Amino acid sequence: MTGTTLLPRRPLGRTGIEVSTLGFGAAPLGDLYATLDDATAIAAVEHALRQGMTLVDTSPLYGHGLSEHRCGTAIRRHGREGVVLSTKVGRWMDPARGRGDGSGYRGGLPHAAVFDYSYDGTLRAVEQSLLRLGTDRIDILLIHDVDVWTHGADAIEDRFREAMEGAYPALDRLRREGRVGAIGIGVNEAEMCVRFAEAGDFDAMLLAGRYSLLEQPALEHFLPLAQRKGIGVILGGVFNSGILATGAVPGAKYNYQDAPPEVMQRVAAIGRVCAAHGVALPTAALHFALGHPAVASVVLGAQSPAEVARNIESLAAPVPAALWGALKAAGLLDESAPTP
Image (cartoon, rainbow, N blue to C red; front, side):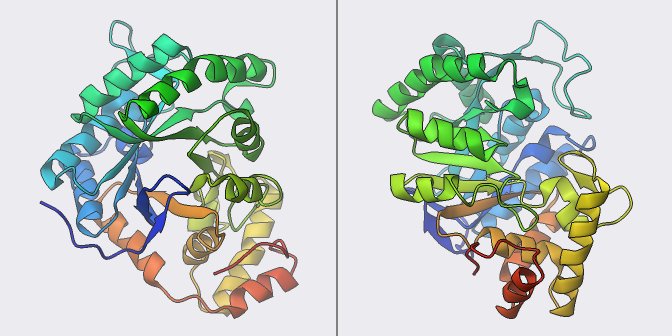
């Protein structure tokens, strides 16, 4: 069964792939914040696909394989045609070892994640993903988490070299063989996007958290470079781990931790300007992220059909142009940032 296209689409760089401007981010389906009801989690993906959300982004890391399992089930029920499936390499799952306490996920599968950016490790990760997803092809394949956030400053140079000497040639081979539509990286740092873009021939990049209504470090170098090279940009983390969705409330999260006072103050100020223009903060955050011409899609996480519906409503909500001028006039938004 295929859904009716209700969401606008954009080209993903020079790949020839079109993606819905709003994509489904499947990290929560790995039991990130809570152990989810299996049927509800799968129904969230099915509902997204029925509403014309063509891009589904997952990863072996998310619930140590559980997110891929759930996404694969939903896609099989819906039909593979028209779905742009994105997953990642850089870790494979070892079923012989328990997950341990360092997963970061409340639930998920009882398999240990093994970092491996080697050529053989990358092919092993792809094979495992194909089996979990129950498909024979992946549309977008990303090298995951080669950034200082994940590995630390002391290890990043070794990890970058491993990825360019191992994972990149493996992905390039899969692309040449037609088994993968587009290759790229998925990271949390704009600087690493620039390094990879200059080091290899990449089609797409997923950047989490570094181009949002709160902060725009990708604006000066990475996004213009992506435009010049025809790299399709997908944005994740446009709520900066939650604070742009909840506002500056007690316990608000920024980068997966309690937001520091300076971030709370800035978000509170942004929220006041949005309220004065009759726009909900998360709606403004979503629309701003889609305002840059390099951006093909924004992936938002959801745990239920109701959350999917809420995200689609935010995309459809009107945002007056005056809001962006007011934010810039207040010094709360980079003057050079393009807006919808």
